[in-house]
Image (cartoon, rainbow, N blue to C red; front, side, top):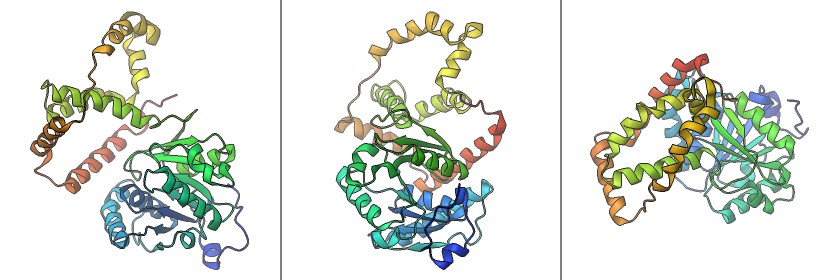
Length: 332
């Protein structure tokens, strides 16, 4: 990607080597779980990172979070020595984005807040900076109504945790420029991610909608006493979880159709499957259901802290990614 940065760049920026996609500096807005994960990933790829968050405890939380993430980055083959040497904190949003090549926003999921954030960013950031929001459901079209140049903004929605899970859903708004989409995909690819451009905006995007659909039925089955949470998790990880790690639902059923592929499956098994859809659960997260799920979560997972469980999950995820390697069935 050609360097289109203005000549007013700082001397330190001019002297620093270009990182992935030609980018040198990133500003991460919001120091929560997603923002911290992005921060660690950007640092490991050589970017200078400025984190901006008005909370006084933000710096301590990010530094601790990056330290926890470092072993996972090392397991992925990324350098982690002096990981925070290029990290700085700036509570003032305008000052934080003044020298950014990339702005990755992870603010509250409230349209008005995001519009105000991006209004400030547009006024203060360099003209060449890539604007990406990590929103999990607010359309870029709506956020960009606050911008004078709405074509600059695109959704770059990661699947948690961003430093580890490959998917980034790239979702353009109605006025997002094609060049912005191309730049976002090139950057995320350079960061080792697997960007997937959605063809249209839809609430919740794709991965979260699929996750929500499965979770709804999971809650129904637990609430009805068919299985416990621990038993349901085991069923998923010992069956469809293994399948979907190497081939998605459509490819899986294409293979399930035998020589006739997906058309044969839809004709002979699909109608039977569809006949059961009206009987799928429609649970409510009312007081009694929440109490049941909470108690079962304590019974199933309460012997370990969330941090310990996350560390174990990350080790297993990395092992799975390494084991699959090139054997993973690429999705067309």
